[in-house]
Image 1 (cartoon, rainbow, N blue to C red):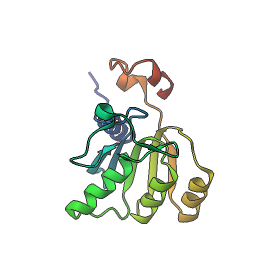
Image 2 (tube, rainbow, N blue to C red):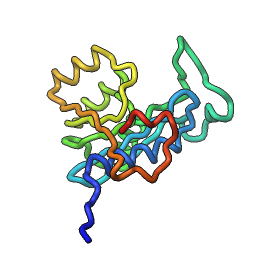
Image 3 (cartoon, rainbow, N blue to C red):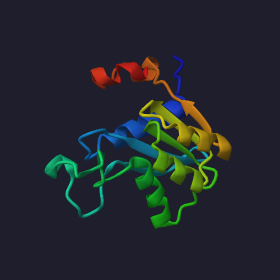
Length: 161
């Protein structure tokens, strides 16, 4: 019997999906995994600052339509690298949703060279332009039912395959 291993982009995106399950945001659950040389160096999900209340417990703290309580998954992953002194230059990031403008700027400044994302989400035109200017590669990943058929993601995940 021949056993086929899951491809790297499917594996790392699955890690990001798993991280998104830790999200404390009631508006959108996002996960991010930073990878260098096919090794996971950090992971993050969107949630509150350590020690603060969570949106799932207290509700969102909205200012101009944005929850200011939430730290985005990409930022959490990048900050984890900074906190523990892990180099991000030349790394790749796997994110469940296309990064917002602020996260795009952080990704570029962190020296991350490739963005893999699962779902489009309010893709900002300026973010796309910055990504192109910086020479960062972007690739949308579609999960293969071959590897995830037995995992129940729910109806909202049907369009990820």
